[in-house]
Amino acid sequence: MSKLMAEGIFKFQILDHGIKLTKDNELPMWVADFRAIAMYDSTSGEWSETFTNDDGDEVNFLEADLQTRGHFVLANKDGEDFFHVDRLTKATPWDGQSFRELAELALSEVQVIGATEEGEYNGNATFNVNWIDHIDADPVRKIDSLEADALDALDAKFGRKKATTKGAKASKPKATAKKNEEDKPKRGRPTVGGKKTEEKEATPTDVNKEIDGLIPDGDLDIDGAYSLCVEHGEKWKKSEEDVGKIWIEQGERLYDDRDPENSDECKTLTKAVLGGIIKF
Image (cartoon, one colour):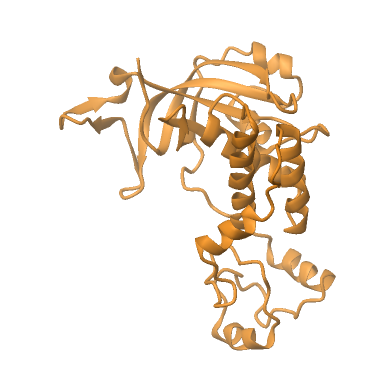
């Protein structure tokens, strides 16, 4: 067995799994070990069951036995499901209800797709799984937008100007829509995937200064750090669920399978989460 040391989208076999609690808020977390069996090639759009090693040799994934781990928080403190629950119900026989039933499921024959992301633990690079889906899912993550009727209702609810071309996709506006853009008030929150206006652009230095100004000078424990992130997340129109997802992602990236252990580590995690909230 060797550790999987690459970012990418893979087909995995589940080797072992169980339910643990997060150390900070004791939230239910599904932890699983995976073996890579294929990798998605975004250039060709195909799955490959082999890879080229450092010596230039072509190696089969199963023969290489490359393994990694994933941590998936299942619910927040109010009992509301995170998106991992929906993915697990699609990828495994679990019905999304009993955590005990999930823990006791035999999943050694189950295959899923998932993505690895580079992180760091004790100065060493890690490549843990940060999301999974059922084995036949599209490996290319796509944004599911509301249908035209629902978007019209949303415009009406929030007093927006009705679209000039009914059914036009928001991600690809017509030329007439661009012309009217000058009549709209500038907004401070960037549009995901959209071109930033001059007013929206911010340098990394500006963002870091803003975040540094939010971190208290004194000691900061893990509960205070989380509360601080939730508080400022609300100011940036982020729900606690959004903040919780970013908290878990950044915590795993920085500290892998543990919580920050001192004030400096809590502040480092807080800065990373606030940075993620601003970029979210």
